[in-house]
Image 1 (cartoon, chains in turn brown, purple):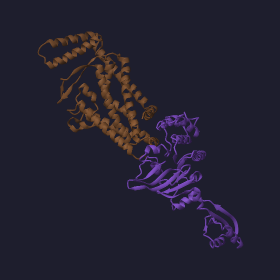
Image 2: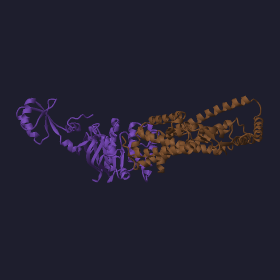
Image 3: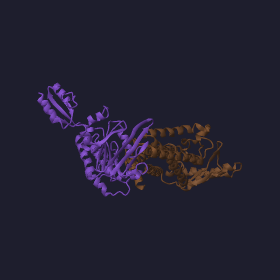
Image 4: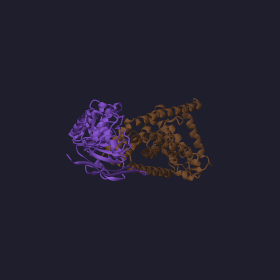
Length: 326
Length: 302
C-alpha cells in the first residue's frame, strides 16, 4: 500500500499540480497583503501624526470611566471589559491595533478563503486524480496489475488527503511569512472574541470568551482542513464518475458558486441547509456571523459535510470497483 | 511446452440489449504466438479487455495459468502482461520512472529484472528521458517492457504494430517470435492486418461479429486453400478440357484456377496432347485475406 501511495504522490508532484497550487497561493496572498497594507496606510494618514499609544491610552481611560458609572446593563459592562482587556494587550505588547501583525492577517485570510479560495485550490488537485488516468488511457495499465482495484483507488484517496494537508499547512505558512514581512510577525497572543451564537436573528453573547489569537487560528485551520477534505472528497467522486477533468471541475465550481449565491438567498428555504455548499462557511461560526439559514450551528454543518463526504466516498469506491473500462 | 496457459470458455458480453461477444472458446499453449484476427468492430478489443480484467464478462470464464480472472484476479494478473490499444504511459515521467512506477505494483519485485527488461527492449540509451520525447516505436517498446516487468507467462498485445513504420513492424515481429521461442511465453496478438498475422503467428482464431469462425494453425488454413493457376491458349478449349477432370474457374486475368491436386501432371499432358499450349502452371498460396473473405462471406476487411 505504501508503494502505491508513493506512486500517486509521485504523479501529483511530477504533474506539477502542487507547484501550481503553491504558486497561486503565493501570488494571491501577496496581492491580499498589499491590499491590506494600503488600507492600513489610509488609516494612519487619517489619524495624522498623533502617536497611536497616546490615543489608545486615552481610549482605555474613557472605557474604564464608563465602566464605573452606574446605569449600564451587565451585558454591556461585560463587553466593555473585554474591550479594555484587548486594548490593554495591544498597549502592553506595543502593537498598533490599526496595524495588524501577520497572525491577524492569517486569521482573517483563513476566514475569507474557506468558502471559495481553498475549495478552488483543492479542486485543482482532486478533479483530475482519477479522470486524467482515464482520459490519458493509463488507467488500463493501472488496472491490469496484480493489485485489487479498491487498493488503487484507496492509494489515490490517501495521496489526495496528503496533498490537501500539505496545501492547508503551506497556505498558513505562506500567509504568515508573506504578510509578516510587511506587518511584522508578532501578535500570536492577541485576545480574540469567540463563542457568539445567534438565536432567532439576535446575537447571543452569553458564551462569548476571550482566547489567544493562536488558539483561534488553530481552530480556524482545523475547520479549513475539514472543509478542504470534504470538497476534495466530493471532487474525487466527480473525478471517478466523469471521464473528463474539465467536466468534473466545472460541476464542482458551479456547485461552489451556487453555494455563495444561495447563502445570501435561502434564509427562508429551510431544507437548503442540507446542501453541502451552504455549509462550507465553518469559520463564520467562530467569528459570530449569522448563518445562511437560521438555526444552523457549527456542529450541524460539520455533520452535514461529513455525511456528504461519506456518501461520496461510498459512491466512488462502489463505482470504481465495478466499472467496465473501455 | 504444451502447457495450457490461457483458456477461455463460453465468453459472452452484452452491453445494453446488444450482445457484442457471442460465446468464445479457445485455449492457448505456452511458447506459441496466437493471432486474433478480425475486422474492426468484430469484438477483438472487447475480448482482450475481458481477458485482462478491464471489462466484466456477462458469462463464461477466463483462466490464466489456472487462475480465474474474476475470482483470483491478483494471481491471474501476476501471470499476465498486456498492452491494450496504444501503450499509454505517463508522458511527464521518464521511461525509467514509468517502469519503476509499475514495478512498485508488483509484489516482491526484484529490481535487477528492471535492467534486464530495459536491455531486452533496447531502450538503455533513452531510458532516463521523459516519455513525451519518445517516438511511437520507442513508446511501443517501453509498453512491452512494462508488460514484461512481472515475468508473465502470457503476453497480450492489442494491435502491437499499429502506427509503426515498416522497420518498426519487422523489429516488433522478430521480438514477438523471440519471446515465444526463447522465453517460452504465450503471446496473443490481435490484428486487423492479415499479412501481419500470417508472418508472425503459429495459430490463428478468425473472429467476426463476436464469434470465432475458425481456429487453426496458419499453415493448415493456407494448405486448405492452395490452388493452381494455369496460363493456356486457347483459353476456352483449355477450360472445357480441364472441366472434364476437375472444377475450373476463369479469373479476371483470363487464367484458369483449379484446386491443388496430385493429378496436375495428368491434366497437363491432357492439355498438351489436345493441342492446347500451356505457358505457365503456378501454385498459388492464398493470403489470409482471400481466406477471410471466404470464411466471412465477403464481409469487408480494412
